[in-house]
Length: 233
Image 1 (tube, rainbow, N blue to C red):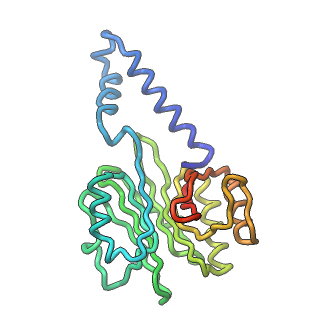
Image 2: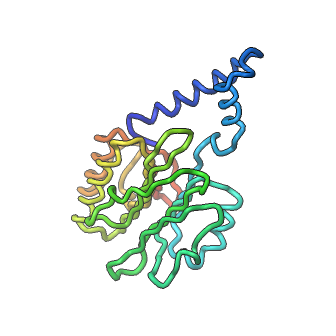
Image 3: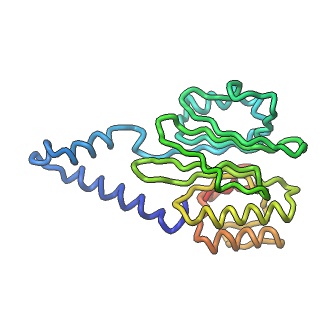
């Protein structure tokens, strides 16, 4: 989770925890205290859990995806390289208990596409205003969680991304950083060393500069596939 507002969530959660631990008998009938106790007992308010998967075709991974949702029970399930097609209807790839958002690749190239599954108990609004004609393989939604709104994005940048597409992506990240946000995706930039905060090549350096300029923080600290890091801000 990133942006300069991200600390606000931690402060509010800590404040509520302190109030709960310090509750006295006199507080038992207090409606505010009762509300906090009820909120703390609800599993949905304990934490916002997210899972990011590179599917390389959702069609032959649907059973695995259903198992992941049933076992891990994430609030957010993000998919890159969904390989969605017009003939695949939403009902074929929907998951019980989740609201589905999808963005298929439309330019005729094979592969690509992203999916976003959001826990149906959460209030969610799709933010189409965050999208760009220059960079289309992304989905943005505003999720209200614990009375806080968080902008959540899933992006896929292909290895053969054009300069125009890269410009569009960076513009979107600059825009997203104005909100409390969580950005997930596969950006195919293995030449970025996140430990040293260094990059090799023009594209990777521009991406890294964008992340640093917007005070975003890479949440994934270990390679998740070979020597490649998922990008998760």
